[in-house]
Image (tube, rainbow, N blue to C red; front, side):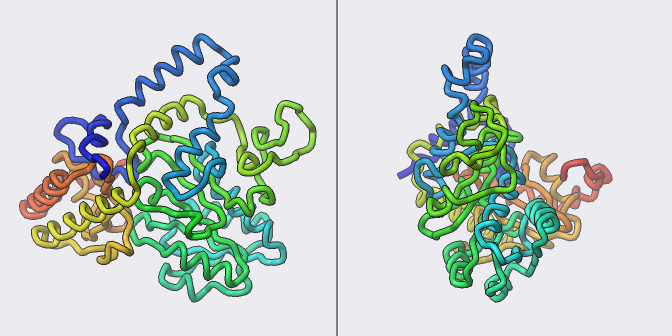
Length: 395
């Protein structure tokens, strides 16, 4: 059994704060600051450029990728780190399109994170493809013989609705298409199994449930059957077969290494590496059970004690990730009042109160405090103070 009391102790959680926003940014693992300081002091300061070899900076994207692979149902040597999630979405979708010549349709849904849709729209316009966006419940019915790439985020960023990865991937394959999955709200929150679902490509960020810190690098995975055939449109120095031969023309590195682009963010990867230490000994079935326990307790508590809110997530936990959304006509102001009271969730337009339950550090005491605080705010109407209606740059 996973010891979640021990994993909770591994994080710096500010006194008096109930943190339910790990689905946007995970808290700092206690080891991260020391790890980054040591890297800067012992490696960058003392080794200078020799750190690329002596400290293993060059191979760091592969090594850290292998640590994430276990958490997403992938194998050793199949995941590589670097760049932002948007860059990795572009790489994965462009590679999938090139593997299906003659087909020009990318299918996604209106519950997808808008940034993924922006990337796909720009790519489609650049290469003469078509992006089709349908309602989440209509995805399966729109998989047809025109489809080249199915591009979905497994867990909806607002509602927490979880797609059936295996079933939709199988449907895409039956139609002759490939499936690209965004795991931004899945990795570190639910029991992902990429190989078991027979997915084709997957991408994800590491600053949410994986706790890598603000702007932590993204990851990309390719199924082994595609790894040596994939040709992403965005080709870079570090993805070359011989980057230090400085050839004028591009030759892809073998396997997932070809999905590297530019110089890896070494300092950020040091922080992420420390964050991944917390996962040693964590069993994914235990993680999922803990997630369901917390989110179910929260839904029961809110519905019993908090008038004026409506569940905006699937009621069936099997169809839900590790976050819960409730709708309220003044959700932004209510969330600002909650934050001021020491319960940090977040708001998503137009009217969603969003709460993420991170099994590594959230517990039932967090759930109880969040429910009690939300009930009090709704009961006494303090959310209607003018200061809680003022919109900040980041909501």
